[in-house]
Image 1: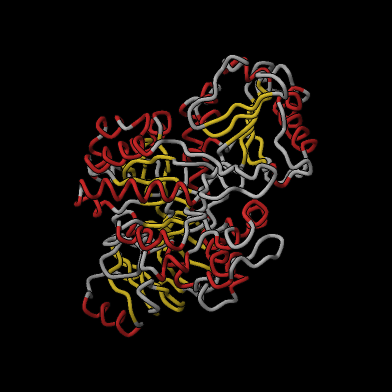
Image 2: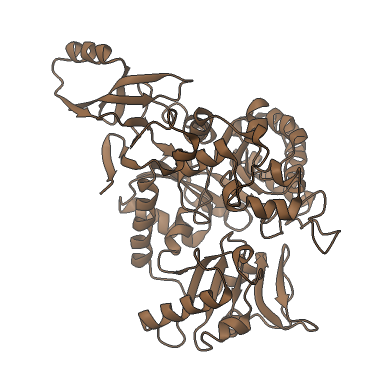
Length: 535
């Protein structure tokens, strides 16, 4: 059985080419071109039964490819208290209280929340352990900032996590302290949050797999057919491997293993490093070099604006440590993804990669990736190009936190965040992501953000850095496939490639830029099989 898609616009991602017909057979694209060419194909294959799908004027594109997110982290947020709509600490407290009451959680049960942002709270600060204690002193409470780089716990959680006045700040992180003492105030930043907060009670495996089912449905609803797990640790791998072994994955998942603590996973599962096993593969490794610009922990070469005129954020590692990480990745022929938000972190990655590529000249073929690149400078981009380094931008920052960046960095730094135009003009491979669960994996929203560069407050962020809708769509299709070394099988509508497709309400190339983010996904197709249909 073959399927002919017709009567709609087909955006191929091969330059500005479009097509009017596409034939799928056995999960691959058998033909793409004109309707006359499709009829000729049909005549040349009389033995093939051909089902015809009328697109009724809708648009057909390659399935979107997620260049960076955390599907296992999204799965773990499914049963959490969500704070994305709270505007004060009082509202946050009430949400937690309602969650405990509605679920009738017994005393001693962990309560987790996700998605508050102190920048958008009336108080313009993080909650404290005392304020969480006021909700419940008998439930350990842990709430995560929207960035995932920091959070707050109450006194019961501090006790269970073993954090007290004698606990030192871990390398690359900070424990908030009450004024005039070493007593923790509940705030945990960077590694203090990501490492010290691992001790909370986790759901059992069956529950986690159900939650992962829900997470992949969320990606499919946005037209995404290839998904990333952006820093996989052992518990995350156990979840992904179980999903693969039980053949429950509908999307392709590419895992990037935590290089610092979990690189042994690759040696333990070599078959996953060699290629997909039931839609799961290991793509490489991941490290962090700094934090969050909206959280003021990204590492900058010049100070943040504000009370402390010398504060520039801070690095996670020394150059010697970063050199060792890159040397290890290159020595094993592992693709390396590196989190860099500030320009000082970007500079550290560039100079360390330059040193290590001089020792491993073949490693440029591994296609290293700078993740986020929020404040990368124009002078740094040619050096990234020389290293064959992809710049993967979190461009939706323009809308969600653009006003905060202007406040933290002023002009021109704040206005030049996510400089995709510069990177494209320098010839870099550029991709675009949402860092889910930081925000939902809405690819079309990111496309709009890249084209408009407007903040929530209505400020234009250096309009000269806007890109075209086609360039933005290529960043989440063919360019993303190149980032994954999969450009020969994904990312464009070409004969022989996988029939990973998305059907949209209308063509993003022919509607006003301000409407792109609201275009509906009608159907998502993975290798010829419909895996999501809008109800």
